[in-house]
Amino acid sequence: MAINIKTRQLDILLNDFELLAKTTLLQHQIANKLLQNNSIESLYEEAEANEIIIDRLEIKIREEAVFTIFQFNPKAADLRKIITYQDITTNLERIADMLLNIIHFLKNTDLSSKEFERTKKDIDKMVQCTEKMLRNAILSFSNEDNKIAYQVIEEDDVVDELFHKISLYLQEEFADKKLSRLIIRNMIQVNAISHNLERIGDNATNIAEATIYLTEGIDIRHGNKD
Image (cartoon, rainbow, N blue to C red):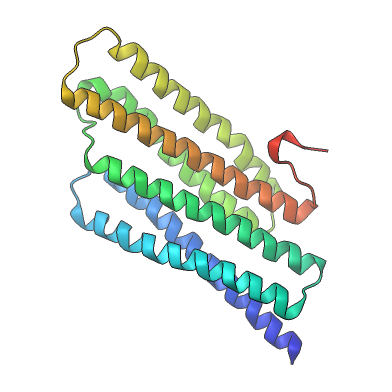
């Protein structure tokens, strides 16, 4: 009977995590849609509602994880997975916060002008890349697939490169020019959007690293691969 109760408790944890992951991915899709058309008001409302769900799930998963540890004294393999749930939940919640930041920035950003045509293409690439990283990072954990996890870590270099490319372009393109308020605002917003996307890539990498810890029992964070 105790084993059945523990199994049900672990299933609750898994179901909550899957809902959190799906809602975070949905936020990413909303951000992508708003990047193409930032005038769809219903998407902003949906994003705010999703944020409430994500925050509540983050708290619930933490409480369920602590309850499971103290109630059932899980063995090493189960304990490692429960701890990994907590780590990944933290990263998903942070990613969701950054996505909401991006959504808020997009509401007041105009990327349709010629000056930002190149920048928009690079942001599009960052959005596509980070969505792929996030999706694969979640998949690597769910399937305990360290091969996919290592691929996610490698893809972070692409996001970093795009971030630095956008920063350099903004510096070089608008240096020594008289800028309107609109251009200045767009520059600030674009820089903030690309920075948040870069941080999403970092947190997706953290999820992949947590998967490697779960599957291999090694901690490769901070360059530690011993």
